[in-house]
Image (cartoon, rainbow, N blue to C red; front, side, top):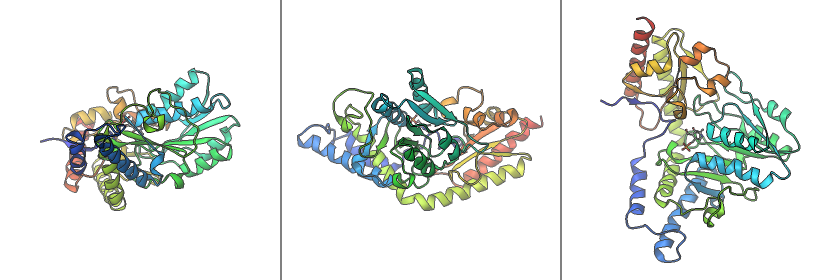
Length: 378
Ligand code: PLP
């Protein structure tokens, strides 16, 4: 019997409706969307339809969507692209310490190349204080990049407030919405962002496709050179089947958004209370309020998170970001939140999704409590 999958923030299964929509584009509809003949035009129409579906999910115009190979690539395009466009005049960039490596590392690379980088602290819940952004803005700040929701804790950031601060000083605003899109409402105008990153495989599309929203007239120069696909921002023949899948996944996510949020919040509450009943001293990491409905990051006392997950064979989850799964050094996000060493090492991230059932929650909670008892009281 497979373990209960509680790692939806690492990746989601592909929705069967997405697979069905993709299949013709892996078979008869194989044209190159840049070709003028009917095969190409059929592929181009599929791309246009997917672009419109993604745009509807985030309240943008279809022409403001650039398809990429993944969210990492979208983040790189946003950060390196704006730096390339504005770098002659504006050399200062702002981010925070809890960002995903696909934001932090391109920014650190820009710092190595001579840009000045401010990395803001986060508070004990993982939140960025907009006053900190305001106090570090400079006339030469090109870009502020703060994620919409954290992949490890689910903590959401006050993006609209931060974007207003950035814009008041003439800077651009980017947000990595890889974890929030499809889970909570994401509207580029309400958030006030100029650039926004999306990841298909976090909302039931396949891995290997992402998108960058680029507000019209945003100064950006692609770090890649090639032909003029995706407005020249992401040269290379588009992966039509994957993009079609991402478009359909976006429409499905939009349709189910409010009810699914309520359902997941209820299931997460059940999971938390059942584990807390069996584990005295269990600690919640992140924000109780400003959070994704599907994410529960908790610290088990007296044990290490990775040993717990190794022992609890009925649960497939992680101690933090999938990108750090091979090491046991402690999550940089939780370190940035200032957690005590014991709380840090006992942390586990449980993330729920579309196929999580109440029965699974009960089985997972029982498995985790039993494993904790085995390890904590040998
Ligand atoms: N940004 C966030 C917040 C993520 O959680 C992830 C994936 O875990 C990414 C970016 C990168 O996504 P990908 O590996 O698909 O490029």
